[in-house]
Image 1 (tube, rainbow, N blue to C red):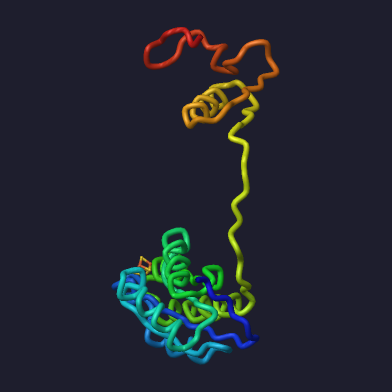
Image 2 (tube, protein in one colour):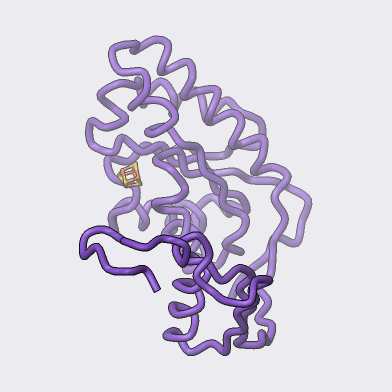
Length: 202
Ligand code: SF4
């Protein structure tokens, strides 16, 4: 069962990831963790070596229960890599998955500031503070499933349009290909030879 916070008290947990030395090699993660504990509404800050691994995720789940967290900030890598992982993690701990926010300490900090220990650490603190500030405004969200018509219209019958129409058709969608000229093929149809076979393009 997904539990949504019912009171107004915001309780944020911050989880700082070393990513081995990917982050910890360029950022003072201990200092960032200490700093996170001082931020408004933060009730716990935990440092992990590999937050996406099972032990790291279990620490998040334990802290949600132990500290009655209703907001989670994971300070680790790009959300493109592990946002679904951590949404699922907090969901399994009983928290609405959209009460999780991320700070990108790797791609946005340690990887782009190697050798600048103080500067990278300062920036990491700012990134964490920003994520905590955003997290305090998060609201639980519900995912909706809506029916869709499995059909598509492709406008333009050049090579890209033809290829898109074929791919969509192969994926099982009904496709309508629209072309304003009397024939399809676009620029390609005007070439008398095409590499590498040197055949006529039509
Ligand atoms: S959560 Fe991201 S930053 Fe942390 S160990 Fe996993 S891949 Fe590395």
